Structures are given as structure tokens and as C-alpha cells.
Length: 553
Image: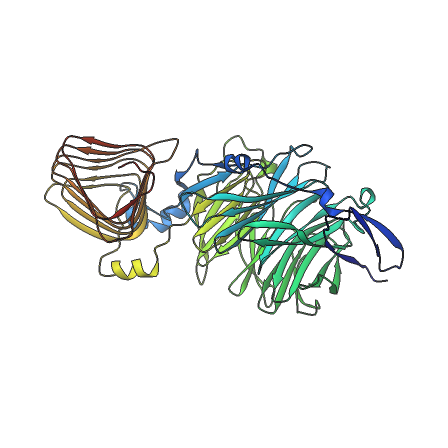
């Protein structure tokens, strides 16, 4: 018998608590009903309470002094420039807890369409895990739609493909009569954000713990660490098709026909679809014992998380070293050993590095080099990051995970704004009385004061207030967010002033309308989401069709 151990497809039957199957060694084994080890969360209030909006709103980026000086060289010696990347925190998801499951930590995230899928494991020696499904179709109100607890398995990685979630993790095979080895992969049906534990397929392979899972076409690839394997499974029935042995696999990434695996004992191996090694990239970094480390493709390169060294960039074809990406910022009071790069994610020209206690850093990738931008203003230790489309999911261990919106302008918005010059001014921006300004872009402001006329076309965030002085005009075409839930800020429209919106405005604070103020909404699809109050101090005018998201008007 080869080292790929038996696969069990299990359809849970209400009339049967246990059944008999024959293993590949022809030895009869009694399997416990898997439903005994899976618990669905049925308390809807508990699911709702797991979504936390306390820190939602505008995110700052703590920029690296050296790299920001290069990026804003023309602003040297002048006022602080408005920053790129107007990010917002949508919500945080509190880690799950249940009886015998009090130490769960987020480990991995998969994004597909309107849903995010999150895996959890347990800190320490206990084998307990969880899968969450989050609906992010409404960027202002994500919901936790399904949660399933695994009472006997850690879950280290998760993937989604065509109606199924795939999780990789570990079990204590000596304590389970189902498991034939410690490394586990499970395929679970999911429909409209609901996990269906009556349609689940388990597989087991050699290795101390399954560390990563990827689904490509009709193949499921699973890695396992400490004398483990990379195994290719048939997606339809989870039968094992092929395998290759490695010493200590941590992660897998697939790019067309190339399959890259990270072995903590030697570095990166690039395999073909038969799992035959095409080339290797020797890396001598200390990847830690049982620590999460990931890799990802970026164009012709592979980016590898290398612990306290940051991230290494290597040419995928010949293995040559390209560059080293250091951890940008060491936060105060963090233990040095906790500042390590655990994971990397690439989304178009953005590279994200999950640096443990060092936070989540953002870098720009270009054809010839990568430039650090800074560290995103998040709480918790960041041990994994995934990004797709306009979203970033950052797993923060026992702090759960955080949902971030990149707020990239849509192609149609870019087209509407193309005739305007790009904004490259200061973060504290003032348009004086009698001045007329109009810009396009995607920027982070600290504060905006309008005495004359200002048009901003694009996507924007403002950490502090927006004030439109008497008889001033502020027009916004696109999307703008002001303040944070725990640090509220306002838009103040003074007497005779006008706020004109075509798009979405989100205010974590109040919209204050003085006597004689005007608010105009253009088009049919504008949204006004005011978390505080709409304060009307006298006779005010509000015109146009819009979605009063929180019902504050």
C-alpha cells in the first residue's frame, strides 16, 4: 500500500449513527458518525453578534519615512501630502467560541464573489477548529451566514471552488477511529452561504498536519508538514491521484501549469502537473517550527514569507534572487520574535505582507521593483492575508479577522473623471473663497475645508472633518468616507453652502446642516450612510433621489 491513505466519502444518514467500511488495507474499521464531531451554530443572535463594527471607518497608513520620501519627493519640506490607498475597515469578525473551544484563532481566508470563507485552529495542543462563511455583498453590512465547529480537528487552510469549501488541517489519529493519519482534508458543500455538513468528504494523508490546500480545475492539491507530502486529489470524489514526498511543507501556490511548494527544510520547489520537480530555489531562512508561512506568484516571480527576514522575491523560472522586502515598521512594545512575515498576498499592483505583531504592510509592485508604502492601521497580530477584487481579509489570530475595502475606482468612474487632473496636493486641503478647484484621483485626506468651489471625482477618505464654509460648494462624484465609528467626525454645511453628491457618501459621525444649507443628490443610485445624526439647524434643502442607508434623513 502506498503512503496515500484511504479516502472516505461520508453521507450522513439520520437513520444511522455509525457504519462499516473497508480500508485500503482490507482491514475492517468502525467509523464514528462524522456528525458527532461537527456542530452547526444555530443561534442566529450569536452569529450576528460576531460581526463587530466598533472600529469601522477610515484607515490610516503609517508610512515608512524612507519610502514615502521617495514617493513624494516633490513634496519634501512642504506640508504632508495626501496619501494613496484610501482604505476603510468594514468590520471585524470575533473569533468563535463554544464548549471545549475557547482558544480559536483565525488561520486562513478564501475569497470568492460575495463570500469570504475563514478557517480557525486552536492555540495549543487541542484539536478544535471552525469554518465561517461571511456575506460581503453589502460593503456596509457584512453578515456571518454560517459557522461549523470541528470538535476534533485543527483547520489550517481553506479554499473554495464551485459550491464546495475545502479545508486542510490536523487530527489526532490515535484518538479518532475515522482518521487514518494526522493530516486531514475535507470537502464540504456550501450553498448561498450555508455550509451543508450532510454532504462532506474526508481524506487523510501522511504528515504531522495538513498545512495548505489549493483547487485548480479538477484537482485538489494538499500539502502536509513534517515528513509529509503534496498530494493531488480528484476533485469529484477526493480519490488520491498522485503524490510527492517532502520534509516540511508549509504552503502551495499554483500559476497556470506551475505548482510551487514551500518546504521549510530547503526552500521552494516548482513542480509540473505530474508533481515532478522542475527547479528549486534554495532558501536558508529560519521558517520556524510549525509556523505558518506562505508564498504567492507575482508575474514572473514567486514571493516567499521568510519569518523575521520579511519576504523574499525570486524568479520562478530560474530561481534567481530578485529582491528582499523587509518588514517596514516595528511597533512599540512588540516582542522581536513576534515580528515575522507569516504570509503574502498579491492583488494587481498591491503586495500585502502579514507580519505578525509587525502588522499588515502594503507595498506597490512595479515591473522593475517593489516599493513599500507603509503599515495599515489595524489591531492584533496579523498571521495571514488574502486579497481579491476590492477586498482584503486579514486574519488576526485570536483577534479574529478584519475586512478591509481598497476603494479602488471602477472603470466607469475612472472614465467619468479622465478629463480632470490628478490630485497631488496636501492632506489638509483648503479651497479659499473665490477659488475653483477640480481633481480626479484616489487619496487619503486628513481634513478638507471648502470656502470656494471644489469638485473631487474618484474615491476618497477623510480622517477628520469636512467643512463647507458659507456659500461654498463641494461636489463629490464617486465615493467618500469620513471618520471612524469610535472616532466620529462630521460634515458641516454652513449657511448658503451646498454639498452635491453623485455616488456614495459614508459618514461615521453627523451631517450638520446650518440654516440655509443645501444637499443635492444627482442620479438615481446615490447612497448616504450616516452613522450619527442628520442635524438640521433651521431651514435646509435636500433634493434628489438617494438611498438613506441608516434612515437618518
